Image (cartoon, rainbow, N blue to C red):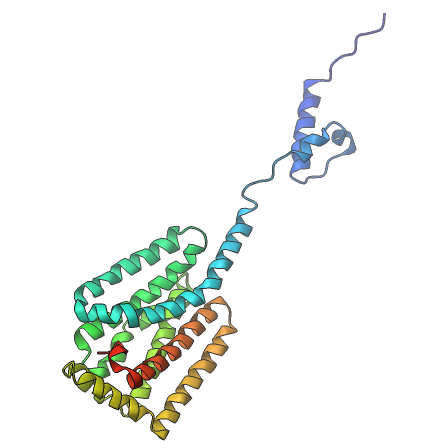
Length: 279
């Protein structure tokens, strides 16, 4: 009578199972143990869900960075159509709205879904420009020499943030400040700045004519050459910034949009001063 075949020891089954785990995670197995591992066990083993997360997050961040220049340009235009009339009607509420913009920006950066997270720092930088604009146009608009110092109130914070997680916030704020400085400098060098308080304090019926006169003064050969020269300089700076990565493209879009908005403001002051947003 032939002896009954005996079942493999329990230890051998345990070794085979552990060997299968090693094969799954990429460890080499000996021929002896590899023969005991079913092929389907290795093939059917599900990939780790965490392995795909870095690539997915990188794609989302790239998509967010690609749309940031467009959003930065849009935020440069917002003060012309929204902030200016709001500040004229109710400067206090417009100033308090800064807290809403800042809170939304911080929450998006910390907990925002997907590419929305990239919008957070941009809104944080915009909140600084919004607050400065509200303070100046709400209470100091008759003092043009105070414009740039008020706009630059957050300059130390912006410079400190260039090396941290709020780099895009700093880049947007600094690019906006550079555009403001060039605009104010052009107004001072062309002799238009003394007319600023006259336009803003004049009666509604007289303000458009004064603004039109100031715009005509810019069209004189020397002032016009100066304005065009500053526009070219800003455009060249923007072109150089565009080559320095995603943050540079954001700053470039901010500068270029500032040049375009200033040009449109000059055209409006010439053709239809009441639509310029200044009066």
